[in-house]
Image (cartoon, rainbow, N blue to C red; front, top):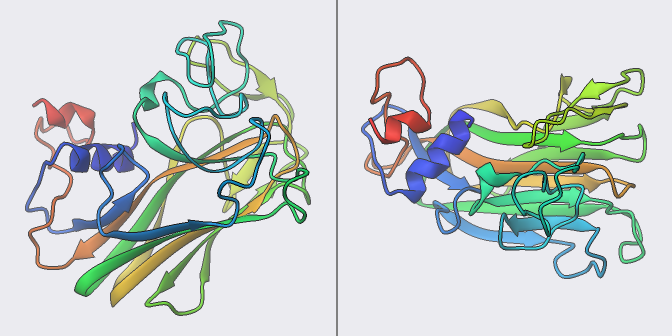
Length: 267
């Protein structure tokens, strides 16, 4: 579990802290745990007719999703348990979580193959924005030029600013991934985010916002992919900063092990 995932789990549990850097906005965590989320828009909402195609949010364990995104090797995520499953990012650890996924957006229902999703947060009074972070993962044999995503942000409705861009390294062969059941499939041509290689374990990307004041803040994911065995996923969008200093935030290091993680919830 990443720090971001621990934060959204804490928000869902209603835990609070007096930490100096508060979580003032979040989404893509436990169902119903959104914080200061004003709206979500998605150009592909309800557009795709094939169950193998996706550009949108799924509730893990309850919504159907493409097999490329679901790791069914131990837990039935996308259908039935399939012990030989060798493709998928979301496994039993993510039951009850909302995750954004994209698979095969280049399809008969989408002429240009591109989707755009926007999360907008609203603060009742100007908030001080210290940082924004997001967890990303991907799995598949991607192609340079036809598979790509970008994450952008906007402050107070101004022009979007690029934050994360993906590239594909077609020189990397036999990259290992790990299924929940223990299998380690090897797949060529991984996707990279800001030069960092993605795999089926979520990694956190954080941007320093420098304490800027804002009433509105948005995060956008745009792009797409051409392949039913290529999955891209995002979760745990978290904005840290300050409003009145009393909002619910992640608990501190309760068990004093030097890590902010799920173990602190029971300490």
